[in-house]
Length: 386
Image (tube, rainbow, N blue to C red; front, top):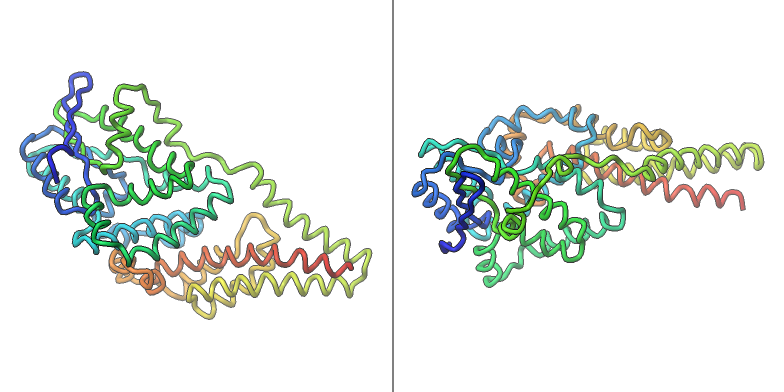
């Protein structure tokens, strides 16, 4: 990679060299090592947060993960989203013959070699994903999922020209910038906000001589924000759930209960029985189908079928949480599943093969099926009145 990807900045009494890398480029790895050895900085800033740093440097991190806590804390989707992003990088990295994050590992090793301290400059990935999900509307979420599916299908048909271009640029940022053209809200959170966050963290890093290693896609943003005041507190906050969503969670169960009451008083027990039948069938079948698509254990599928009609009436619990806990209990993930996780998520098939990711898929797919079941059941129940 050409030396023009090293950018020089000053801030107060600090001298800062910013290295723009492509996250799956061999040239980037060599450039990072060269710059750190030549500059011998006091501090090396890396585009990592604490959790991503630990996943790179501590092999036991996954072994210490608590799947039950992930489900209980309603973080299954966030963890699955993080793993899907890792899948994209691994898939492209395989095409380019290198490992995602290798340039960050080299930066860490080179820093240790010259006695420099490590400064984590990126925002927590969980905060980024949570802000992304909370600030997007329903239609934007649907478009994002469709875009990710389309992009995943296109990974196997990357041309030689595209591969050469990826070697010059940050791959994940390229993917996100393309999606950002269609989904500007997503680009703002994943790229623009992190440009500001990285700028602040690099400017305030300890030491007078600093080397910062970031994805090439962030360099223009850092250059833009370098001399501007930045308040990172708003960037670290997770927006509250939409009031409309909170109201909606209670309105739908209330509507269902109201339909049952009206059916009983105005149409009799026979009509109420028919309504109950459609409610149970729609929720149970679709929730069970969701668990089945995740290749869940038969007992897990049974738990999804049984729990969905009840949990759909309770805003405080979801069918996916029940089925996910059952899958975790009957599947009993072993240390090997945690150890194999980085390798298994290098293919879509591996998401279903690994017990950890399968549990996450069970939670998400069952919840989707249960939600669809609710909306399918309502018109079927109303038809009983006609």
